[in-house]
Amino acid sequence: MNENLFASFIAPTILGLPAAVLIILFPPLLIPTSKYLINNRLITTQQWLIKLTSKQMMAMHNTKGRTWSLMLVSLIIFIATTNLLGLLPHSFTPTTQLSMNLAMAIPLWAGAVIMGFRSKIKNALAHFLPQGTPTPLIPMLVIIETISLLIQPMALAVRLTANITAGHLLMHLIGSATLAMSTINLPSTLIIFTILILLTIMEIAVALIQAYVFTLLVSLYLHDNT
Image 1: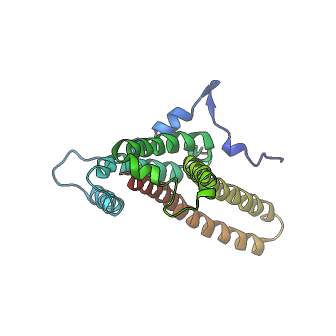
Image 2 (image 1 turned 30 degrees about the vertical axis):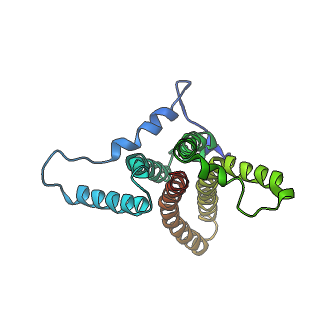
Image 3 (image 1 turned 180 degrees about the vertical axis):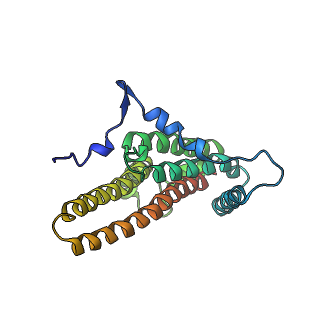
């Protein structure tokens, strides 16, 4: 059977209509909430993890930067749950789409940069020209620093897309090899299946780490502009 290797990355449709919006709205429904004064262990653990993550990311920010804490915590939860749901069989991972990652990265990066130009424009402009630069190199350095600033959201999106896509492709290839070897050599099948299990565990870690890295870099961009 010839199967398209990239079929799992095609945006799904329902009756000809794109279902990506419904898939994107689904992860927040999995976050448990409590209406009681005393929470259960799951809610308590969830609140502890959120508090630990937000404290670590917001420790370097001033008062103005800490106003973004709710947005950054929501961002890391959304990316992490979306990445983890994409590891389920016959599921779709929106973070494998560069367009969606750009849609997350560009507004957050632009908001941080605009805040920097509004609050401390001298420091923001000083990044384009380091102190002590020789006069002949000034035009070149301004162009290089401008390009490096504009490429930041692209780097954010491409990093997340590449890491998630590479992991999914590798799992797909090893899974296909396991099925192909199951009718040929049982010992080899067990070895490949063990590798697949270890890879799946690693991909769970990668899904969480990439969510943290994406949010941390946005936090660093915010710190540079506040």
